[in-house]
Amino acid sequence: MNQLVHLIALRKPFLLLGTAALLVSSSLTLSSCGEKETTVTPQEPLTVQLATTATLGSFLVDADGNTLYYFTLDTGGTSMCPSGPCLDAWPIFYDAKLTVGNGLKASDFATITHPNGQLQTTYKGWPLYYYAIKNTTTGQYTREKPGEALGQDLGHHWFVVRTDYSLMVGTKALLDKNTNTTSLKNFLIDPQGRTLYTYAKDSKSPSTLPTNCTGSCATAWPVFFNSSVSLPTFADLKASDFGTITRTDGTGNSTQKQLTYKGMPLYYCAGDNQTPGKTEGHNLTTNGEPWVVAEF
Image (cartoon, rainbow, N blue to C red; front, side, top):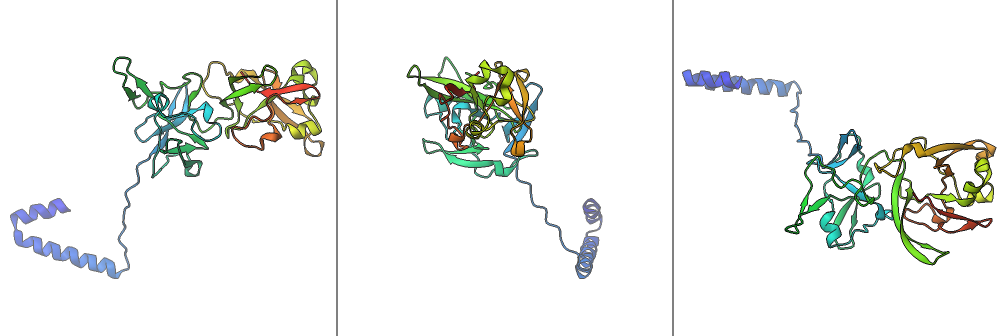
């Protein structure tokens, strides 16, 4: 319509005035009939979305497709990646006006303050990071390119962030009360960062797994179960190593299922009070048998 008006104006300028008057008249007519103008609000650009690869599945990336990572030492919800070489290689991700794509919920994101004073975005309690590669000649760090995931499984402590993890990897320096030495251990946690444990008696009496910890023991060591096994892509973790046993000590003596890892049932520790990052159950004993984090 605008092109037609322009052509007519070039040939007969006086016709433009008549056309404009007609358009104004039509506008007034529409207004008198109760029509309302439609205002189109520009859509905010997505700042966090999902990318998918055959190897890693669906994982979080920023608006430009840069991969986001979690650090296994951050089980408590606070960044354990200090300023200096760690943050040089793993820059903080933060967005003040977060807009999420399909498959993500804004309520799963929050903001914390890194120990160095910087703001940092979290996902389900996990601080988020980028990955940067050090140039061995210049010593300068350069963020990996959009679409890359070169930081995946580095040091067995850095993994892409997926929405569907049913089990994750946690890391913490733990005291061995028998040797009085402290060492860094990788162990299984749930997606909220809560520690999972195994019971030594279960390895000694595998034929009676469902009854090795019942009654008051099961109250102190609640069972862990998830119907799916979705893991970080990590050579040492295999879905085939997980199984299920059926117990008869559920509510009202009903049956309940429990997940096992390499034949060992997985438990929470009530003493951890469902707090992410807590490992109060490590090295405790029941009937002379020790409990330890579910190491792998």
